[in-house]
Every structure is written in C-alpha cells, then in structure tokens.
Image 1 (cartoon, rainbow, N blue to C red):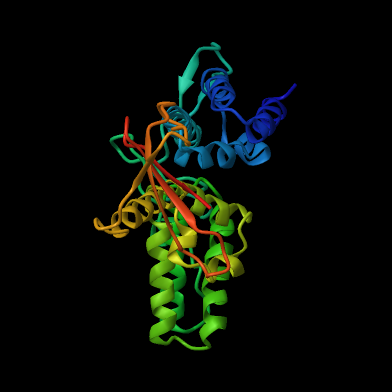
Image 2 (cartoon, rainbow, N blue to C red):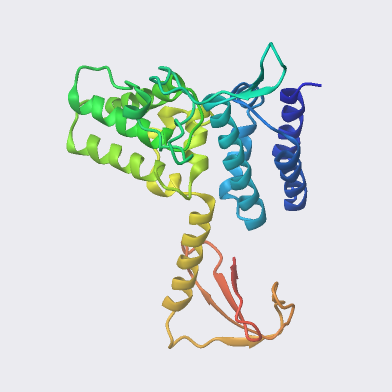
Length: 296
C-alpha cells in the first residue's frame, strides 16, 4: 500500500472520529510513522485535514496538529531545497545543496532562507499575479487576499491565485466599483484571513471547501474561529447575568443540579429575553462552585 493511500485512509478516519482520544491516537501515528512530500500531501489531502485541527478546542489535539504541520512543511522544504542520492560510481550518499538560482515560477511552499526558516509567502515572493483587471486598486486588493491566503499555505501558486482572484471579483460584483464600501470589505476579509488563530478559514478557501462567493459575503463574526465564537458567547452570557440587576432577588432552590460539581444548592432568576409569547429564560448560579447556565 502506497504512502498516499495509507494517508488517505487515516485522514478519513480522522475526519469521522468523534472523540478527542481517537483524534490524538491518529495524529500520533501520522507524526511518527509518515514522511511526506508535496505529491503525497496533494494526493492524500492530509495537510488540509490536519491543518484544520490546529484551531481545535482541545489543546492536546491542536498542539499535536501544529507539530505535524510544522514537521511536514519542513519535510517538503527539504525535498525542494536538497535531496540525498547515491552516486553511480561508489554508491555513497551525496547531499545535493540547495540551488542558488532563481526558484521555479510555481513553488508550492516558501523558499528556505539561510537560517533554515521559511519566508512567509506573499504574491511578490511567489511571483504571483492574482490581479489582472487593469484596475490598480482591484489588482492591489487581489494581491492582499493572496498574501493572506498564502502566508502559511503549501498549495500551488496557481491554486491560491485562482482563489484570491475569485474573492476580489466576488466583492467587486457586490459593489460594482472600487468604492469605500468595497475597500472596507476587502480590509475586513484580509484581517480575518490573516488571523493566526484561524488557520482553518484560510485552508477552507484555498481547498475550495468554502466558496469565494459565500466567503465574500460573510461578516467578521461568521469568519471567526470556533474558539473565538465560544469566547465571545461566554462574555455575552456573563454580561447578561450581570445586567439583570442587583435589585432583582434570586431565589434559592435544590431543584437544579450543577453540571460541574453535581451539587444542588443553586440560586435562580427568570427574565423575559425574547418575545412575550415565548417562554421565560431561567438563569441559574451554583452556590457551591459559581457555575452559571441558562435554559428556556
């Protein structure tokens, strides 16, 4: 069984597993037992599957995914920058040094620098031209989107070019001109794409999983990572609890069980948070551990 076929099998298992323990087990196998190159990653799509887990809510899963992505990037770079081969004469391995000539026009990964670290990919560094509209503003905006999509990607230049061009065109079609609203939307997309804590957004666009048309219409909240959304919701819930007012009297009850400490001594209050014909929302606070929750 080829490396790519084995990777595909594990990637499928990784995508369908439901527990963090199983995810960690599969990721450990990927880290320890596989050495990859660009062709294998393209065929198996393992890089995309693992890359999405870098923003997973479980720290053990996200950290392991980050380690694997870093390891695979280094392996791809080594394969491009230098290789080990046997000489025809004595059969001894010879290390080929990285070429000092101009890199090929379609590199899939950043070119390693002298200190072994990879440069951040940009349209200029890749020699890419995602904008070809003849409009300076539109072309510059397409380059910005390219820079955001390519910064940590291993995808081919033409693939990222196509996505960046598609995003800019979709935004332009919404506004019909390079207006202030058009520029503001491009800036919003760029900022959210460059968010280091949201690699899955970049990868979903580069892979085509998220269409450029849908992405171009998303709000900042919709583009946020799951971790950011959960954190924002927690803040909203806490603020709502506080906004109920100190004057409101909470009643004590043993009718609710805390999901955290399993104790039953709680305080609760009710408020009409939706329309009048909807049931009231009950806000509960555990006296023992301070855990808060709500239900309707």
